Amino acid sequence: MLTSGCLLALAGCGPKQTDVQKATERGILLLGNGAEPQTLDPHVATGVPENHIITTLLEGLIAYHPYDDTAIEPGMAESFETNATGDVYTFHLRDAQWSNGDPVTAQDFVYSYQRMLDPKLAAQYVTMLFVVKNAQAYYESLSSEDPNVKPLAWDEVGIKALDDKTLEITLIAPMPYFPLMLKHYSWFPVNPRAIEENGGMTSRNGRWFQVGNHVSNGPFRLKNWTTNQVLEVEKNPLYWDADKVRLNGIRFFPIESSDTEERLFEAGGLHKTYEIPLSKIDEYKAQKPNRIRLDPYLGSYFYRINVSRNDALADPRVRRALTLSIDRETITKNVLRGGQIPAYYFVPQGISGYESQDYFKYDPAEAKRLLAEAGYPDGKGFPNFEILYNTLEQHKIIAETIQQMWKSTLGIDVGIYNQEWKVYLDAQSNLDYDISRAGWIGDYVDPYTFLEMFTTGNGNNDTGWSNARYDELIATAPLAGTTEKRYAMLQEAESILMEELPIIPIYIYTRPFLIHPDLKNWNPKLLDNRNMKYIWLEDSGE
Image (cartoon, rainbow, N blue to C red; front, side, top):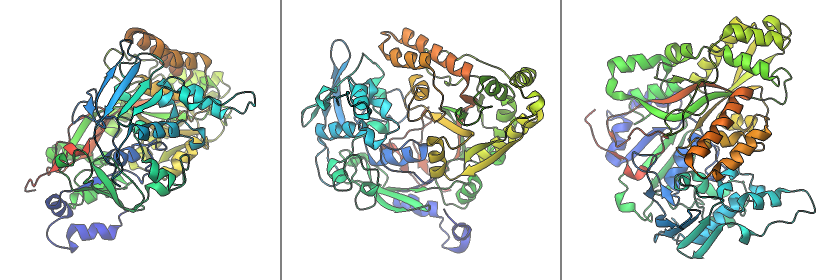
């Protein structure tokens, strides 16, 4: 974390040129990253701070388009085709190299996907690969403790290297949105030699992604990582499209305080912030409109409820009472002020063909009635519980606001506490919390990416909640045959989720941030995923 001494130096203790001006001259992008990354392993990572870095270092079969998240941009695959029934994809890899000089081959992708599907790696995103024929059966056979269950042979899984440059993937059913899924980092390849030399296929020790060991196939390679201070990547000269990469490097600063980040931006220390202090949004809109952006964002901000360790929170009536007593209009208009949309559903609007509907409304009277019915009239006898949030000022303010709403409406006392990003993620995974702040950004533009994570045993569920009908709908929706039928099944699943409420939707995101005019081609994008080879810096004179 940058110290106040660094901020003073940037503000005027050194040369007249700011860090941004010097960095623009050198082609080095200075970015706020929101938090220290938990990992750089694409098969282990789950968070946005990790995503921003991993996508500069590695490239999958399909890449991110510069402005359209629904477009198909060739990545490691220069082309692909499907069979007549649409359930077999054949990818033709371009001539590309890893940063250590190894060729990128179809076998690298097979190795990477076999790694993802090995239960010993404990990849939370493993279910992303269950769209592949026999992938789930393979994973579950290896996971089984039943001595009568024989491990399924890898050859039975629908992932084949036909030759060094041809990869065939067979799906469980035709899925027109499958190429969009391949943009997600869980589908990225890793370099087999680097993995095997640093612990082996299922090791999570992190040695392979340390400086000096990391091997990239993306537009940048890892240069420096000083924990809690800066992570720096530099242009990868062996990247297949290196001539089009206009940046020479990127520095990611893990600044968790939006106030600290804003001061650093104003001192000329960042080209772009991760967040903006809520109290400064109106000021920038009025006084510096060219420095603030409020971009659309396909994501839901919500609270997870651990239904497994608190008897009161295990009661659906209590969860609904908590949900109905949150005034989302007040939060979005008076607290956030960044164009966020109150959420009375979980799947955000903006997905063509999927109709979001309100499943509940702000209803304090009904909330009080439900709490009394559950045995806690006016909050009497309600057990103590706490809201966990990862360290960020915005999350604290929202937690304090909801804490007050629950006290004034329901008469219950709620504690709040924060944890650093890595600790916070572990607490959720271990169900070591009562209620936890959460956010989910679409991995691709489809409702499935929001709903699939709440199936029983999913690595991203983190609530202890389970519903057999919900699991059935999510499992069979990809087999529906048409988009209309699939969406109808997913809407039924969402209605179950919103009836039982193991989560509390609060608002639909926008992306408020500060941006320096030197930063070019940072286009608004629903998923906010960038192909950094399309970004450049240009002296604006400011």
